[in-house]
Length: 156
Image (cartoon, rainbow, N blue to C red; front, side, top):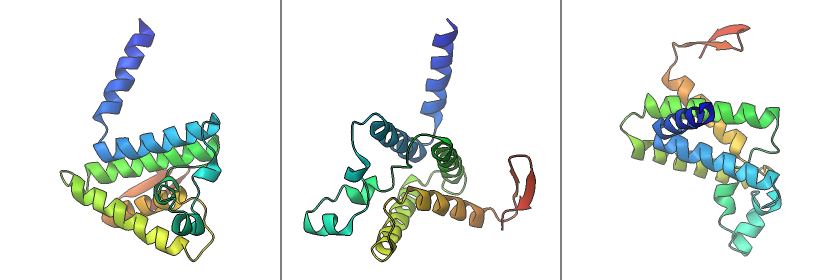
């Protein structure tokens, strides 16, 4: 009985997430789990300009944003940050502007891919999370943040 209630609560919370946040976070978790379970290899996902341009492996332009490494502290930290700031942006600055939010995703992704052609970055998920945090902080400059209950600071 308790497990059924927990499932219902989790399901309700999941379905109440904003659509872009739900889609992106789910894609990141599913991709990382697929790698963890050896269903796919990280070598099929990473950003490789040569394979993208010469062999037309265009999926790499998207999958580079979905993999956060092996499951561990770093993965959970990144997923929590991604989920939190993506959701706050979508429910705050972009409330009722889903198309604008998707365009911000696309614009940010394109900028990162262009820069990745010149630097040696294999996965861009961490950079994308940093972009979400940066955009949120610029749109909420007066908010005071608390870092794990230890540090209080102004966003900007």
